[in-house]
Length: 64
Image (tube, rainbow, N blue to C red; front, side, top):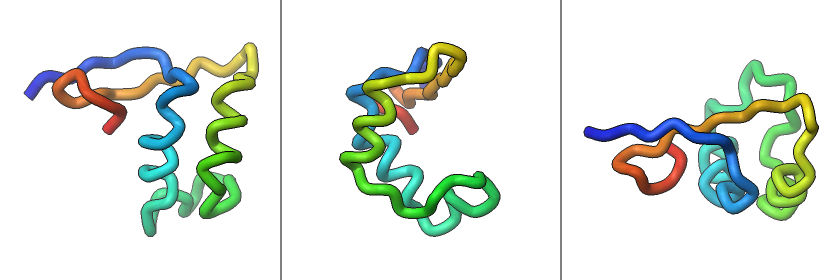
């Protein structure tokens, strides 16, 4: 299985939202649980200049 590690892009918001709304994902992250996909999209479209977020894509598709 091939993995690609790359910088997080605003277009990744849907995949990231699916991951972060999983039943155990928010536990222990100090983030509000079950954020809306629109809030996630806005947050990724206005990144913090000091934030270096990476994603892992399985098979070169979308973040896993």
